[in-house]
Length: 135
Image (tube, rainbow, N blue to C red):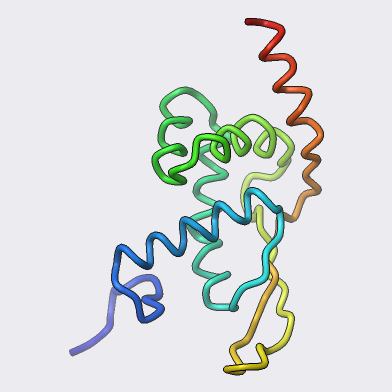
């Protein structure tokens, strides 16, 4: 048996558990702008999150619905498409992974993953106020 052509890490989990793990990590990153996790999870999460940011930068109703389906969270999808994506000025490479050492219990290598560009979440309240005024 060979492993040619297989992509992605399995993390010792079944498919549904692995997808739920990645979804939860992506939601936490969007909500908190920076999270600590293992290096392998950070590298795997970066693949999916950068695709979501690219979808959010395109905008539009279909892409908004796609983000809602992928994140399974309406508020975070709106935050990503209305607040975070307009503040990102680059075409790719939205996230940074910094190694932070080793975890004490199992000696797993840990990393911090965060946005490369500075994200100001105060814009969120201004965008929400503008929506309320138009209604």
